[in-house]
Image 1 (spheres, one colour):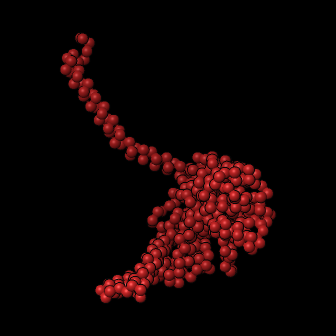
Image 2 (tube, helix red, strand yellow):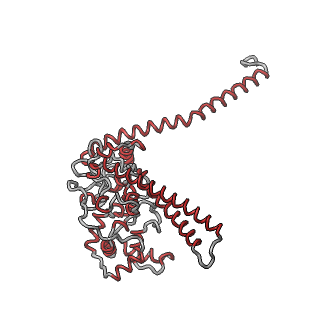
Image 3 (cartoon, helix red, strand yellow):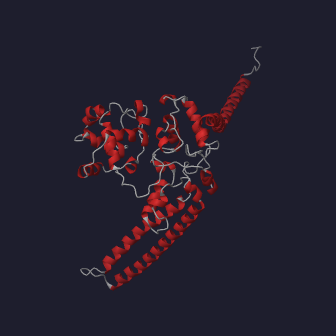
Length: 412
């Protein structure tokens, strides 16, 4: 007992309680500051990743995409690009027009219903009810005028914005908009559909995932078909080691972090659009049509097959292989089964495996492939992720192109 620092039992109890309370305070302080510490760690990690990505971009990507990411020499699209990052310069105006048009549809239905009640000879309304109906119609007509005025104002704003972006449009922003629609035509629903599907790069290509996934997937698999889009391009290579390229997955992520670091969120300005040397092109040959293109196949599978039979559309396996490998870049994901079922063996797998599943009872090979291309989300093969395959091939392919691809896959 003489060797004890605190001899009394009361003192030792007090010391123990004091130490316990102190430990609890220390643990609490660490817990309170843990989130801030982790956020600081994430910022440091992201910063180092961006720095490594900048070095990779300068050595591997800048020759085609430009030192500042604006695109260079008609070899590749600009990546330091508000359109890529989802900033639509006329998005607010397009949304306002779409909302107003929907309101007009609802209001006009209400007016039609009231007029039908007012003129019902079989069950005529009372005088009091007639007055109520007329008053309601007057109020609805005022709402119609208000919605039309908001549409006209939004259209005028959109036209004014696009006029300031003429040079950006010349460089590929909203490709084909001036040949497909008349933006000054009040209430033209086709205009709203066009801008809603072309306002951002992801909507333009029909990508269902986020921008990080789009960038990483592009880096992994490359874009061999881009040689047909940009005249001075030899085609973007597959950069990931998993697809035969030189970069590890962590280097792919570093490159993506550097590219995504260009995002300005809601702070993009018109001059940012104008600075982009060239935008992404939706057409495989990079040209603008001199006449309206043939209608797309769409995603009505049975309707597509019926048109093929009625119009005697026969696919060409030779043309289908070119479309599959180059124009639509299907090989990027279907080569060796890395991100999607391997091209080789398609016919055998479909006929001996897929068509034996209950949900495909009565399907032909052609019906299965057409559905897989135009409605990829309806069925996802086990072992592969959903959302990777673009959902707009039905809008990008004609009946003949789709038939050609089916004919090619029949040979696999």
